[in-house]
Image (cartoon, rainbow, N blue to C red; front, side, top):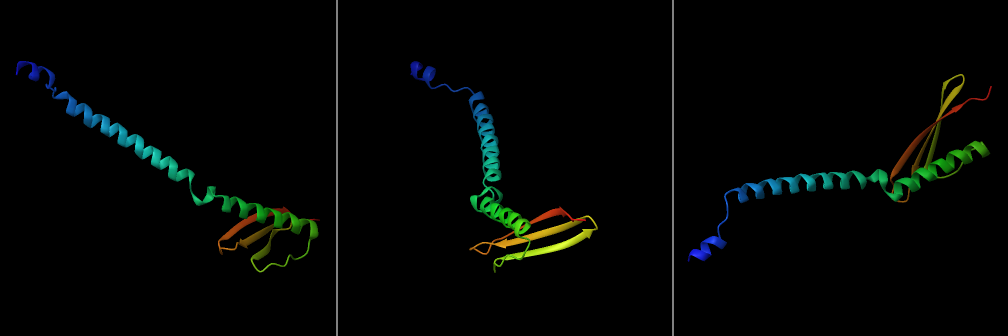
Length: 110
């Protein structure tokens, strides 16, 4: 019986150490989930970048062709801010009807 007490003796500090270890693990897990959710948002999806590239392409095509581009999923608004500056807002809806809007500021030609 004496030998069993020697092997199964647990100090009282082991419970405190376990609580501290679980607290540290929980904090690390919290930060891991926080970083994971901030990385995988809608602004980092491939659909977001695809729509952004499409809007940029439409803007540059509009600058080259300088006439209206016909598309039912596209809304282009031009607003003159002052004599030398105008704002071009392009709103694009993709096949899932998700809206992406981007504004460009362009100098007016004198």
